[in-house]
Image 1 (tube, helix red, strand yellow):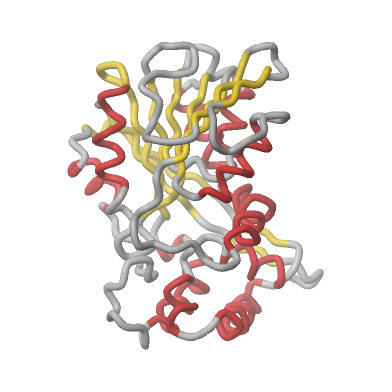
Image 2: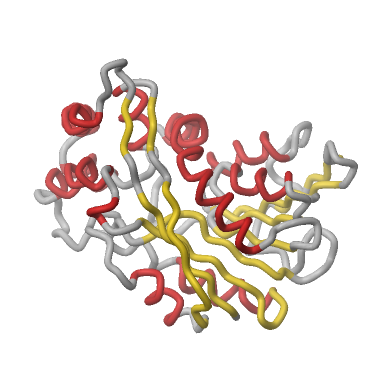
Length: 294
C-alpha cells in the first residue's frame, strides 16, 4: 500500500487565515474523524483493496487516505491547504522531511511512499498504473461556490484514470436530516452583514437535492448509483465542538463579517440544545455520496 501526497498551487488572491496551523490541527484532531463512516461506506461499496489505484482530491490531513492504505490501496492525495497536507505527511510518511523536493519513505507494510510537492495530480499511481478510483471526500453543497474549483479539478483528473473509472463525490444530506444545519445557520445569519452580499463564496446555504448531480454533469461524469451514510458529530464538550466546526471553513464568511470571538460565542449558544447531561455534544447527521463513471 503506497500513499502519495501532492500539493496543488493555492488559488491566487486567497490568503491563508492567520490561525491556519491551529485550524488545520483542529480539523485533524477533532473534526475529520466525524466523516470516517462515510469513508468506510464508500470503500466498502467500491471494494477498495490492494488492486485499487486511488486519487484523493482534497485529501485534507489524510485520514481517508490512511483508511484506504490500510486496505492495501495505492493512494495519491492532492490538496491546496498546505497546513493540512503537512499533517497528512506526518501521518502517512513518517520520517519524510523537507518541503521543497520529492521525498520517498519506506511504508511500514514494506512498500514505498512517494511525496510530490508541486503541480497537479501525479499522472499515475505510485506503482505506475493509471488510477481506477477518484474520490472527493470534502463534502459539498453546504456553502456558496463550494463546487466551483472542483469541476476543473475533476476535468483535469479524469484523463489520468482508466476508461470507465469510478469517481465518488460526497456532500451533506438534506438539512432536515442534519442536526448540525441548525448550528450552521448561525454562520449564514452572521454573514448577512458581510460585503459583498449573500452570494459571497463560502457563505453557508441549505443543501440542494441535486448538488452532486450538478457537479457530475458539469464535469462530464455519468452517475451510477448513490448512497446515504449516518455521520453523527460527537464532541467531548462545547469548546471542542466550536473548535471542530470552525475548522471546516463554513464559518469563515461569518468571521469576516463580525469577528472570531462573536462567532465562537454564538456557535456555543447554538450548540446548547445538542448538549447531553454529561456535557458532551451529539448531533446526528446524514451525508450523501454519488458514484459516477468516467
